[in-house]
Image (cartoon, rainbow, N blue to C red):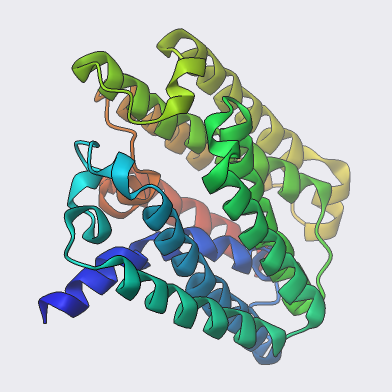
Length: 290
């Protein structure tokens, strides 16, 4: 039983929440009720999740020595030795082949996007994660690729608005995660990532403040855009900006006041305030769209 629990820890299914961005094209096109498109999106979600888990295993395999020195990551299955390297390779192979095989059932284009995601993450693991600023950019691009997977799976075109706002929001979250790494270094003197040399609190706090402002302004501009108002046939979309502002401010509070922004996924899964703002936003947007 413990072995299977450790496998779950290794493949990190709680991270699949990030893959719900794949549903964004379908949601914003007001086509969630179309069963065939929904099935294609669910298939893409499962395929991407399996492949993303393979990437997590690969990252842990590459970073196993560094993780053993990390105050939080030292308990991961590979770092703690509860899963061997050979077992990790087997798990990674099964996950990646399953994910790529499943995505191919949608289209070759979808598989190529997923392969681009894998290639980008391999490059990230070996070198790009050591380059300050570029490292968080890569993380943000990963979220944009999720959008493109959803777009290709449903043949729904992406607007520049959704691509830009997804990138900016993901960049904000990546900076918050990197802030936690800097705090660990300041508290313990331990550089858990080489890239920390390229950051300090002043830079990250400034960048987060800028990203938060740009995300809010971009979202308000989107909701009041004549083109969007005409397409959605509603002048009340701007009201959903309230939930976006509340969510961003809460996240800043978690990062700056509570000093605990190391895992965006866990924050979304555990913070009631964030959950309520997300529920409010989804409910309001759904009411307006559908």
